[in-house]
Image 1 (cartoon, rainbow, N blue to C red):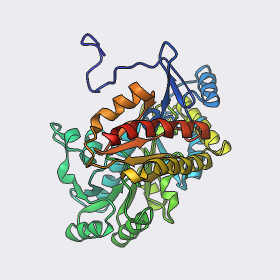
Image 2 (image 1 turned 60 degrees about the vertical axis):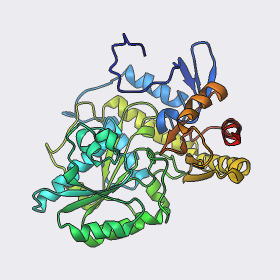
Image 3 (image 1 turned 180 degrees about the vertical axis):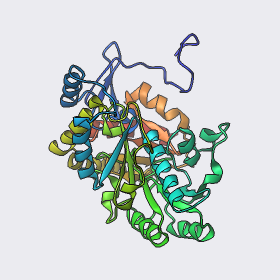
Image 4 (image 1 turned 90 degrees about the vertical axis):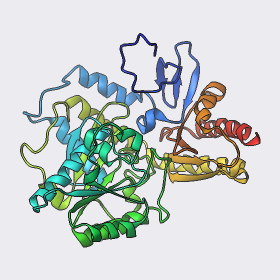
Length: 398
């Protein structure tokens, strides 16, 4: 982006442009291929331009793109039923992004508190969490840089360590104005952080929420839609949340988000409580329905799990003795690098792109975040591993 660009400089863009994509690959205008291990940050979970999804977009765009939520929308009903079925939830509100879905969830928690007579309710959130960039969701986000200068609503949130259910219990004991606990099953933006107790941690949080009669909100914007090897990451556990949010892979590149409820949370929002001009359009919901069908019918989750095991084995066989470790689940993996080897972590993204034609992301300081397509082939998985090993062998040898 040049200094004469009309685009506000809110992103630090890499010096490359892509002209097209197909499956696990992005291509520059001259046809140079790049293996995409990031997929738009967990967005194109079924790869770029999946033929069934692209065909559905083209067909629906020629029939009906938008009406209004003033009217019944057939595709919204279809997508809602399919999504709630795979999510194990009852009801859904369609939005346009993960931040909007989380905003709806937080509004819902505050409305729930209002019905219980709380004057200024608080939500317990996790250290190192990321929930979005609207005013309310960025207030819930741990990143101080993201919050700086926006007069965020910090007093409305209580931050506790991720993975520590006793800290949640202590916070609830110290505050009688908490209405909800909000967390990600795996923290993506801060380095693919997993709880020490794994997904059992979610059961611990559920038990604490039940004991104190507060809502449990799971942010599965990044972990949902098959990313971890289950349709939603919480399904690795034995519990279910009261409110569940998702986006990213929900539309495989098409902008859409969802806030789902179950049980008593179904009754929190009524007529006029929330809305969205573009939420749940015929086009967006046709895409959601198609994505769900593809994930289910093409066995994308079992493929993701199988390729994850192949990827992890290959990486650890080559790099384990160098102090490299892995964390995450399915096709959401953090390659954690040692901090005592003088690695220039900030340079790894450029080196991977320029020298290995591999697209990656560094999160949490010293973790390479891998978010490749769920349905990439075994050969592509090995190709990705080999490119990453070549990059890191060179770095670790310095």
